[in-house]
Length: 122
Image (cartoon, rainbow, N blue to C red; front, top):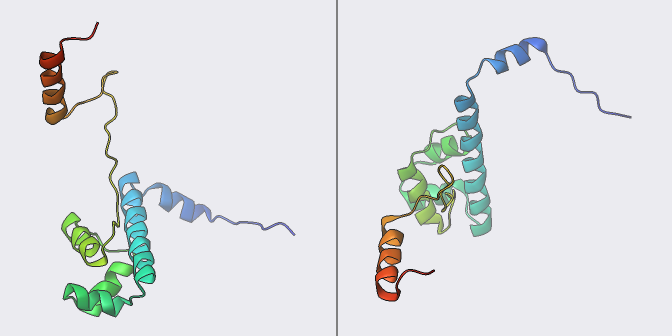
């Protein structure tokens, strides 16, 4: 038997009014909570263990794990340090701008030094 899904028109209307950035923030908050939960499982830790390791109250960790906490980068970094693994990752490349990739100052210096040392390639 096929599953039939029902969508309430009022729900759809209200959901459509939620700004995209709010939807993304909620999705990220829940994903971070899931990642923390996964890391706790891998370490064999409870929420209380994490609270003790971070010097926090168990109630605060429970709030984090609800998926409704607005994490700061500082808090995430502290959690990562205590757990010994990354909770979030940031892409380490940049998208091209007008067909040209942006380059770090270090890479520009390296290329400049290389050109001086070995001459420009033809």
